[in-house]
Length: 87
Image 1 (cartoon, rainbow, N blue to C red):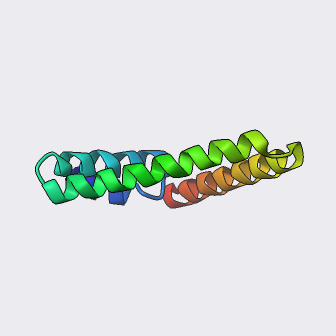
Image 2: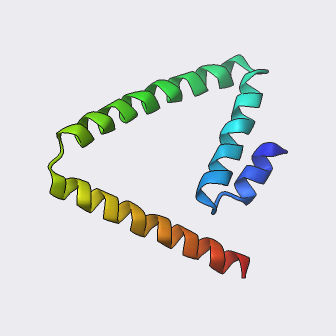
């Protein structure tokens, strides 16, 4: 049920993903295969996060500006999409 709700609210960036991850973690408590799959994904996500942090620390200011502006634009577009879906 929680994962179904997560799929419904998936267009909203944060709540949908959080509900999906929460539902997956509940399933992982009951299933060894799901637990191993989530562990595998967690390791990959941690490696990606560490690589991103290393890149950010070494990146030139111009790259940081481009990345920040792009992220703000993407969040704005996601917000507009949510508003259009709700109206």
